[in-house]
Length: 183
Image 1 (cartoon, helix red, strand yellow):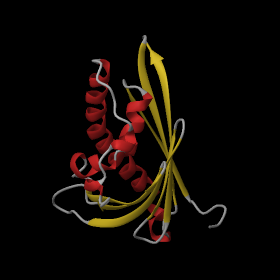
Image 2 (cartoon, helix red, strand yellow):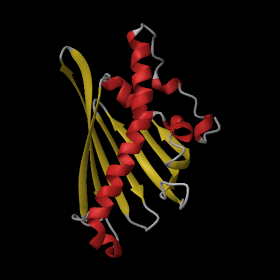
Image 3 (cartoon, helix red, strand yellow):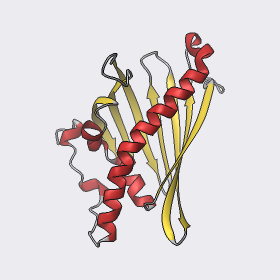
């Protein structure tokens, strides 16, 4: 890949009144995608997993509405880099690649724990989409807001359970059958 392969960059920030551990759990829990994000994804299948790295296939519903839905297949290399980074590289249906680097930072506000999530998106837009960079940015903002709305509710419930004293299971005990693995 050329040094300046990516011709589009956009960063989106989100915050939640939850600890960093809960946000990282959300990023690594591929099984929830098939249930929580039905508007955005037709399916996710984990094809391979090794340590903190996952190779998955996503059926992405790009229409974002019921009147003009269309699903395109994406493959993604997804990796958690301790202590606070999630990275993924995807091959798009256009044959180009996208890279996302997510930085997850915990902080305190008014004696309450919060986590700030910084998504840095790097895309290689095909030549025919270059004139539509503003539309691509809007689409990314809309897509991220939709996913975050769904994830935030789940993260808040998980944080509430942890605050009430429930113990968390290690991530490696999560079942993978619903993600397409047949161990």
